[in-house]
Structures are given as structure tokens and as C-alpha cells.
Amino acid sequence: MPAPKLLAGLSKPLLFGLYGAVGGLLGALVFAEPLWQLASPPPPPPAKPQVAVTASKDVEVFIGGENEFTVEIARDGFDGPIAVRFENLPAGVAVASVTIPKGETEAKAKVAAARGAAVASNSLKVVAEAKADGKTLTAETSIACHVSDPSRSQADIVFVLDVTGSMGWAIDGVRRGIGRFADELNQNRIDFRVGLVAFRDLTYPEDEQNGLKLLETLQFKGSPFTSDPDTFRAATARLRAAGGGDDPESSLEAIGEACNQQFRKSATKVLLLITDALPKVIQGQTNGPQPRAAIVAGVKGTAEVV
Image (cartoon, rainbow, N blue to C red; front, side, top):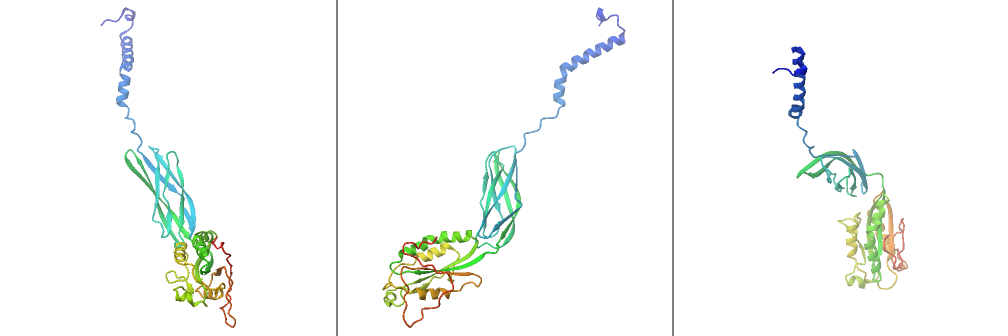
């Protein structure tokens, strides 16, 4: 093909070079984009949903107490809620599961140790679980849980309770109030046990003839003491107000009976006398030892334990 007149005066090498440059420019314009698409690597696939979890490395809880610690999560590829549960707990220790909602990354977990829990150190498993793209995602970590029992004051408390005919209000008050009473002792870090001696008039045999016990120490699995307020409440609920004869009652004999219980050597010994009558004093007879403990006299209508 002859060269255009405008380029006819150019030498052949220069003319061929000019043709090559023009051809390369046209090729770049026409084929560069398709060639680039063919040569480029494919785009990365969407990120797979993932979850990770972490928590406080060491958590301490006192026996009979509670504590809180922080659980944190990280998400990738989704933003849904994540449930966190706890496994391998020491005996008597509970940690409630928590759910970290959408858009949040942490939550507070509460650990509680029952009064019957033992001193222990366990490695707890923390398991996070979520649903994403129809699949279940899980992640795990571990924390050290230390259950300890710091030095606590001990108290053995005996209710000395008049259960004659006028004392229904007192029986109900002790039964209703024992839970709150136990909570107060626990909050004040007191290692407590409670017992109860019920009494009527020991000089009024008609009560015994009618099937009433004149002097009774409640038993809790063979022991006169318990640290379980529910067990104490159930035993107290079986008492009934009846009998009693004349007005004075055998308070002093009941106190003496309470003093003879199996108190712990290191415990503070407390007697709580609840009655609406004066003690019966029989001339020429000993009414039992005077207790070396605190005695609180109840007044009718105000015996609820607080």
C-alpha cells in the first residue's frame, strides 16, 4: 500500500516506525481493557463470618457471695447477637449465661458461690455461639475461677420461742422473717447457724396429755442447727400455738435447754427469747443455768425477725 502523499517524502524506516506507533496506539485503545480483565486476579470472596471471645483471666468469688467480670467478643462478616455460656464450673458455683446483642461487643457476667461451695480454683471454659449464614459459629477461651472463704465471724443463734396459745403471731413472724434475717447475716459476712427451742408451761401436764410437747428442740438432719433458711422455715411451719395454762411460762427452763446445744467453740452464742409472758419461777427449784449470751424479749405483735 503506497504511503499517503503527506508522508511520501519520509524514508521507509521512519515511515514503518510511524505505522507501528499508530498500530500500537489503536491496539491499546481497543484491546487493553479486555486484556486487563483477563490478566487481573479474581476479586476476593466475601469474608467468612467469624467470632472470637475473651474474658477476664482471673475471677475471684467468696463463698456465699457474688462477683462480676467482663466478657468481650469480636465479629467479622456479620453483626448478629452472640450467646455466651460457661462450663466446667466448680461445685456450688454458678455463672448465668449472657447474650451480647447486635452492635455491642461486651457484657457483664455474674458469678455466685453458694454457702456450701468449697474452696477451689478451676479453669472455666467460656463458649461464645452465634448464627450467621445458616451456620453455627463458636469460639472458646478459658478463665481461672478462684473460690475463697475469707475469715468470717461465726454465730450460732437459737430462737427460744414461746408456742403457747397466744403466740401464733410469733411463730408466723419467725417463719416469714428467717429469709431476710439470713440475707442480712450473709451480707455482713457472718458464718451462721440457726436453731429453735419451742416451749410451753412445763408445770401444766394437761398440755402433754393433749399431745402437745412442753419443751422441744427442732432437729435438722440430726442436728439442732442449720444454715439453710428454707429448711428452718419448713420446720418452723410445723409448730402450732396451743396450750400454756396460766400466764407465766417456762422461759428459764427453755433458755437452759438452749444453752445445752452443741455450739461451735469459735462461734458467738446468741439466744433470742420471744415470748409475751413472764417466766414462771417455782420457789425452791432451780430453773436452769443463766445463759452467757444475748437475750432479746419479744413484745406481742413485733416478733417478726428482721
